[in-house]
Image (cartoon, rainbow over all chains, first blue to last red; front, side, top):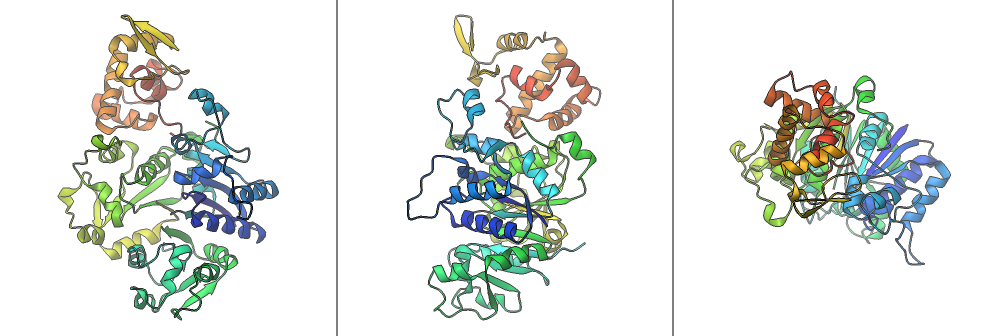
Length: 129
Length: 100
Length: 133
Length: 110
């Protein structure tokens, strides 16, 4: 089945861990994931600057690996990202910022991508909190 | 056309009425899946416990376990499941609504 | 903006899904309500059939006389009154949630249909997909 | 970028949107329009006033569809259509009008 996820929670929330587990298990079961859309505080997943303790689960890294393996489309909402300091080189230039932090595994795009995922997928599952 | 809904609830029923809102929209054929802090809903002592009777309910077992709840008195009507079953359920029900 | 869906495209294909957006959180404490509205506006701009459902503390978003300038936030009430220009006409509120909070129709800024629990159940179960906020 | 007007420095971002919305005045609008190769006629001003009114009322920079619909309700169908707006403000009318009318840059999302 074609699935998409909308993640509204930050990486520090267990809801984000649940979302990751859901995605991983779904892929292993042979479902396809059309897109994972990070919105609201979910956009914090896009920061390449998070550091987990050596003895802690690294959720961002786990998403990266999952993306490598399955070529996932990980999209963070551009407006929600800008508001929270998650920006790529293009936006850094546009807003004249000296730094940018979006990880390579992510893409910033508009809410049209969420609408598209909603319409294209057979199931859309939201994770928030 | 009536669809079946898998409701996911990740809030403790002791701290707010998220579960009650969910129950208000539940109809026959739906399912409720408790996860994260929603796992506390599996306790027999939770205020809405009696409202889960005759409803199809699931809880993520590792979330119960993590919170030390497996040794507590649990609502026997709630099925303990893993993430595999979570994924499977979300494809079996027509729509997923997340209560957070 | 790089995207695979232009508004023209969406009008011609993939247009048959009933999308429900469920708003359950009070405004201003965080910006979930504002961002949920943005998602609703986008859904409509891309030509999708949309139903907005306010319930729980989400019905507080509908209150009139919001004056958010003093806390330096955009006024959600004003934004909601623009829904008609975004062709969003199916707007519902859970009557039980309104009653619980002792809110009356004339306390609300926009014209919503307050629906009883049974209708609410029916409405939710009619949607092909639900976006949960 | 910046330009000076009446001894005041007016700053814009790289895409020509006003950095400080309070700087806006009709004279500034003329300058902004000139940068976009648009010469403002009365027909342009009518739409500029309209979009500023929309923003004041709804605190949203409208995308094309709501802008067309709002124009139609306020000025009638003859003007409330995308062809009319495109003729006045070519290519991407909603963005261009927002820029000249001193509204915030429309969210990239919409």
